[in-house]
Length: 315
Image 1 (cartoon, rainbow, N blue to C red):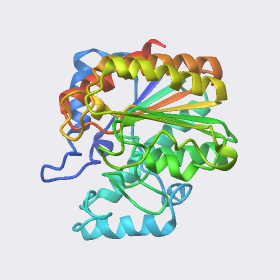
Image 2: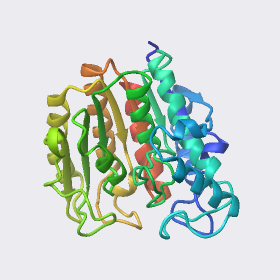
Image 3: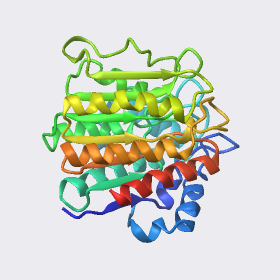
Image 4: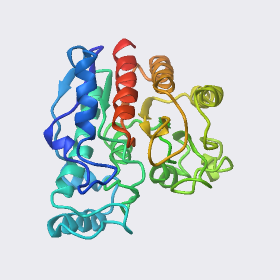
C-alpha cells in the first residue's frame, strides 16, 4: 500500500455550498486551498479529482425517497430541502452527490492499496439522516462510506471520531444500536447549540451500549479542556480495536467561529489527527479518512484543516 495521502479538491467539489451569504458558502474550499498552497501542502499530497456518486450508491445510506426529493428541489432551485437551514438551489443535487462520490473514490483508493490516508475538506456532512437533510447537510457522505465498507468490503468494526462543534446526530442515531460502529464525539453541549443532542448519557443502545462516547463541552472551553477529554476518546477507540478509522474535523470549534462558542486553536485539530493516525497505524493498517466538516470562519477552517492535512502527511 502506498504511504501517501490523497487530497480531494476540485471545482465540482467546491460547488457544495449555498448562495446569498449563507454561512456554508461555496468559497470554503478555496479558503482552504489558498492556505494549503501557501504552506506547500499541495506539493506533498497527491491531488485527486472529485467524482459524482450514482444514485444507486447514495441508496446505500439514504432512502430513494430522500434522493428523489433532493433531485426535485435542486431542479426547482428554490425553497428549502429541510425545514429551513438547508436551501434548495440549482445544482445542489450534483454538488452533494459529488461530496459523497469523492468520499467513495477515496475509500476505493484506500481499500485497493492506492493510498493509506485521504482528506476531503468539503465533506463530513454529519447531520443528514437516512431520510432527510438537516443542518446544511444534504447527503451524508460518511454514512455512505460506512455502509459501503460493510456491504462491499466486509469491514465491520469502524471507528468514527468527530470534533466538529456540533454533535454528529446524523451518524450517531442511525448506528445507535450497532455494536460495530465505534463512535466518539467531542462537541459543544447540546443544551446550548444545534442540534440539541449528544448528551453524555447517550452511549448506545442494546448490544451497542458502551460503544458510543459523547463528550459535551461548555461554551468557552478550549484546548486545555479538549486535551483532557481527548484521553477518554483515545482510550475508548483503542479499547474497541477498530479495523478502519474515519475522522470528522470540523473547524467550527475554533475560537471566533460565528455559529458556536468553543475556543480551540488549530493545535487541538493537529493533536487529534496525530493521535488518530497513530491509532490507525496500530489497529487499521494505517487506514484513515479525514473529512473537513463545519467551520464558518474562513481563516479558522483553513488553519485547522491544513493542520490536519499536515499531520496526515507526516504520519
